[in-house]
Image 1: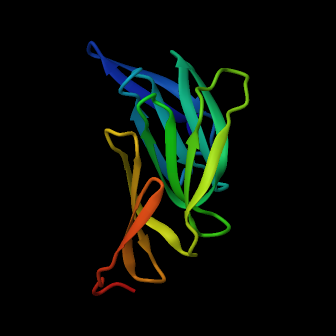
Image 2: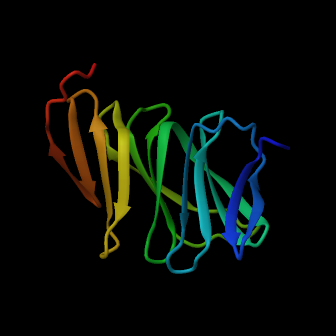
Length: 170
């Protein structure tokens, strides 16, 4: 189908296009990273039903996809020192900042195990977020806390609040 999510790579003057997932073409958010250790591409996206899906390229032309959770907006993907995915997002139902990670590599046909933590339990947090992993393999998340009107900074396993008035914003 023309609306399927695809991955393209350019090598030796030629584009190689692979289908990642059969979707309706209306993804709300998409993040893509290539593992620095393995060189294996991974994608995380929110589909039109609000489900977060993680896809990993198992071999050329073959991607496995698992449903992670449900999100209300942007998702961010970072890969740790073993190329395992870590995902940050605002929960669809509770509107809280979630931090989710996979504990082991997936294998085709096996269920993927995800650990989901609430990084900030206040409602309406996790908007306008950014995520990275440092050299000590700790996750860092910067995000907007709407009720407090502040920017917060989460470092696994704690967060720090930086407050700055945002002028001209509603």
